[in-house]
Length: 143
Image (cartoon, rainbow, N blue to C red):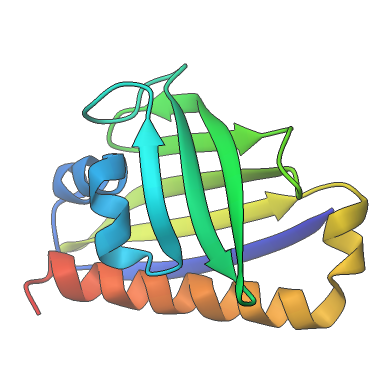
């Protein structure tokens, strides 16, 4: 298993941040590696929502279907895929801080493919999490 995590403070109410990051229609705005996403139902995530996404990573396009497995409005949401080329779980945790929201975004990968990627994939994943979090912060803070 490999674990990647990034935390960012966003100067917006937790409700606003949660609503934005749990609506798959917004993902392409702040995750440029996402080429396309097709959720099973429109609107925000809820437990059981599935989505098929196409991402570009290291010059290759990879299709993955994931399911929302945890959804606690305003504080936590998680998606998971056991059938992906690299099985993963992605979790958003939101905490209130004075005048802002602290968002911690964690991606856990499992299986042989996660070990084979090694340091190169690890660095790229960390960089992407950081860049996406910066982009999200800019969008939600109006920049």
